[in-house]
Length: 238
Image (cartoon, rainbow, N blue to C red; front, side, top):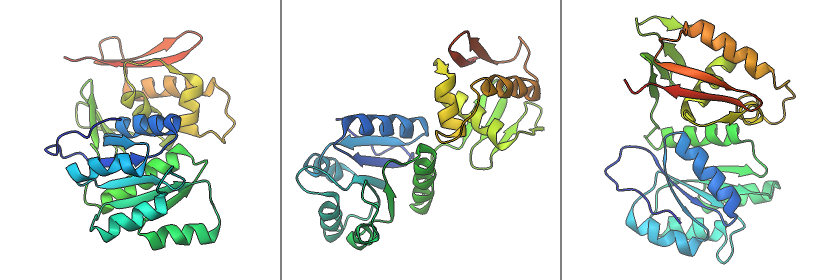
C-alpha cells in the first residue's frame, strides 16, 4: 500500500479504497499519469490511517469492500466531519443502490465495468469542484500542450490546429513518453474499447500529427515507430 506524499504539494490528492488489487493498481497508475497524487488501500480499515494523516480532495470507494462496505464507511466518514468528495464504484446498477450511495454522502456513483475515459472525466470534474486541478500544461520541444484549454502552441506562439482525436492522441503519447505503447493500448485509450478501428488508423494519425507539428529531425521531440508494436515518444531534456 502506498503512503501519501507530503501535504506540501499542490497537486490534487486522491485515495482509492478498492480490494481488487488489479483494478486498484490500474486505476492508481492512470490517475498518476493524469497528474494526481494517489494513495491506496484495500479496505476501510487500511484507509483510516491515511485519512488521519491528511485530507484528500477525492475518495474513490468500492462499495463491496471486505469488512465495512463502502456505504457504511462513507456514512461514518461524514459523521466524523470528513469533507472529501466521494466517488463510489460498484457493480450494482439498480436505482435503489445508486440512491443509497448518494444518501451515504457520495457526490458521484459509477457502475462497473466502467470506461476509463469516463472515469477520468468524472474525476476531473470532481477535483475541479474541490478547487484543485491536475497539471494542465505540458511542454515538449518548445511546444506547449494545455489540457484545460485543449490547445497546442508552437515555439513561435502560433496555435497548432488539431482535431479532437489528434489532440487526445498527442496528450496520451506525452503522458506516457519514454514508454513503448502498443497500437492496441493506444486505440483503447484514445478511441475507446467499444469502438472498432483498424489498428493502422493509429499510423495515419501519428503521421498527421508530425505534419501538423512540423516535425523534423532537429525537433526537440520524436515519435518513434516500433515495428510490429506501436510507438514511443521521446522529448529532449535540452
